Length: 353
Image 1 (cartoon, rainbow, N blue to C red):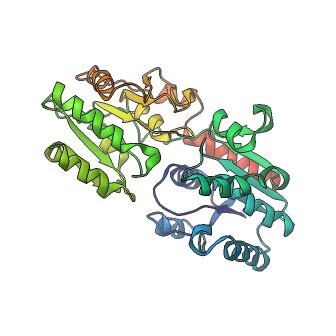
Image 2: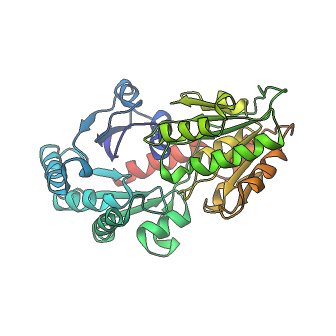
Image 3: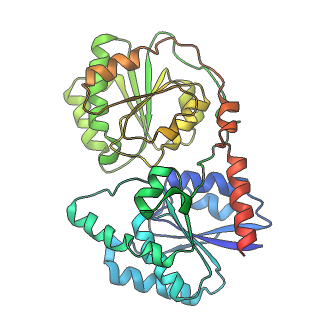
């Protein structure tokens, strides 16, 4: 058995964390095991331990500063020489991981891009760009969830990085229609951060409610901006029509209730939940900042965030009462079945170990 160290910010139910866990559940764990170097606790902690993984916690770079973070990473690699493969999912902060790993002589150093833009203000972006410049001189392999995400993080041609498709368990995301026939239900699954643009989503839903009084919005996810969005919902008189689920551990069941899925994100590396929604046969309306690679079935409509909330509402309403289709085969044929992705990564790790 070989052990692969995955470097992540946290163990919550975010997009790239969900991707890693999807792979982890579907690899042959008698051949490859996953361990995690992380900073923030989350819902996957117990499952990782149950699957045989090890977890190591260090303070994040924004908690105690870059010098403490570097010291912790360096000390970790020094005391754990057993790791020959390091797979980092921290976007531009991966530069620090890659440099420390190279100095300790770790032979396989993978930087994996899951986004197309830095979050945060100008000063934070300057800091991230500094670390981003360390990636290319220190990594051995460059993985990405989409071509756009690869060009952003690595600043190179697409033939210089490998697109690893964000596979999903298509059997779990089969067509299932549990919609309330008396209501028009729109679903969004996302962390409550600026990137996910819940403010615009509420504006669009407010317009949708004017067009269809039966409309309801279900928001799954947690995050720092959740209370702010709740306050806006209350201010607009939408409290009875918007449901805040919090963390959702059964996304297929939630999507079975949806007439449409809405993703007005400011940016996305790919948008794995769009793949899941399409597999379930749920039509999607997304911002044109989302990579077109996410439209596998032709059932994703892209709109500009410069368009009015009313236009978004009108587009969503087109899907009221629409028959759902089983798109699992289309998803699999496009290479987005988790078994395809897990096999690729497992073979990669074994060949490089």
